Image (tube, rainbow, N blue to C red; front, side, top):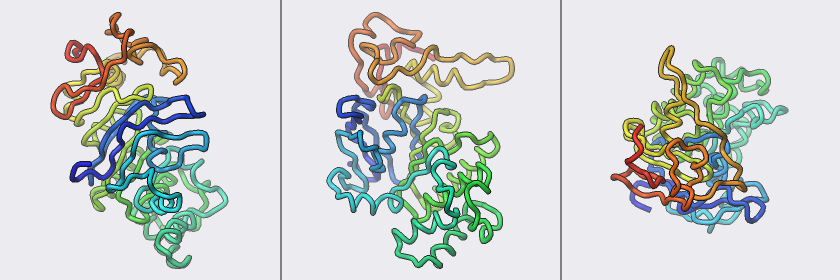
Length: 320
């Protein structure tokens, strides 16, 4: 790990049921205090990668390769040591708060649980701190809302509760998995503005997982584009938007609304199942630039310019 790196995912592959590979040899680093975007369609492996970092993969899944956090190799830690990191040094904002929050416990108690587990606070002190955290995430009348149950709150407020829970112990890293799913556009902007403000205030690192390149353009400094369990392109955000090279990245950018009366250009087809990937380049069956050689061998992820990685044999022949 280089100086300044907080999280390093090194050649990680994730398997279900022993041999079904859903993520294939991905590597990326997240620096201290940065927002790093991971973008791709549903089924690309974004969320399961975050689950591997958190140590919450399902029982029928495992990963190979190494994940380092604050210089520690996570696979070398005991189960108790991993529990000590979760919710404390590493936390996660899940994409659907209504299914992530316990419906029979107040939101205040669910935040307080984190503080009691990792900070050894008494229940009264933890509940008082939970109310302060609700205030930090801009929920009005936090001393009263701390007694509410999840169903008594709107979707935007529930997402704010998830953020309050995630930042309760002032973690070094927050994994934000589709944090604005099912929220309307104005609430999305409020939630992301809030998250970005908290990130800047506490100098946290954030991995922003999303299918929306528009969110990444406004919030992340660097971004990795995932498809079929692979990183297809990675660069700083300005470079990626100014000079996208991989056909999948270009397709995602062409799918973003650009103005009235300008038609969208969708990517044809769907993300293939992990057990039925095409030969060669895994995007070849949906790519508008495909050639015969694309189906003969899978290209490697190579650096085409400093800090700009691409997995395509065509490279600069493809022009957005």
